[in-house]
Image 1 (tube, rainbow, N blue to C red):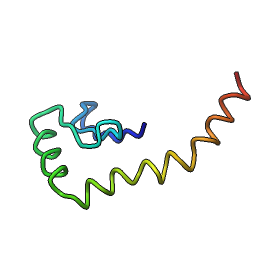
Image 2 (image 1 turned 90 degrees about the vertical axis):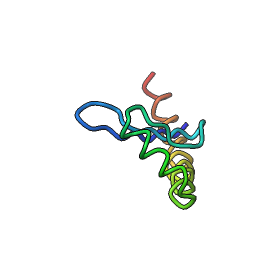
Image 3 (image 1 turned 120 degrees about the horizontal axis):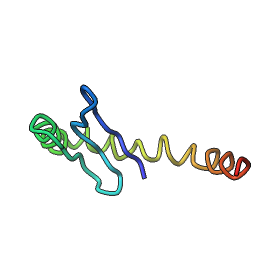
Image 4 (image 1 turned 30 degrees about the horizontal axis):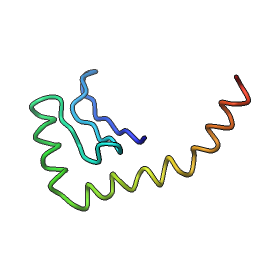
Length: 70
């Protein structure tokens, strides 16, 4: 699962979760941002593509490192 969170002053404002497939806001400001980002198809597709860019290229490396240290 890919999660991208936006914080300000240690308070989580907005989060993108690949399992949900959209941005979710946790504050008034975060809800407004999430709504705007979810209505922008290019921004939403870029966030969804980050799972393939980051997770799929690194998961085997992280998995192998975890197994050798346990």
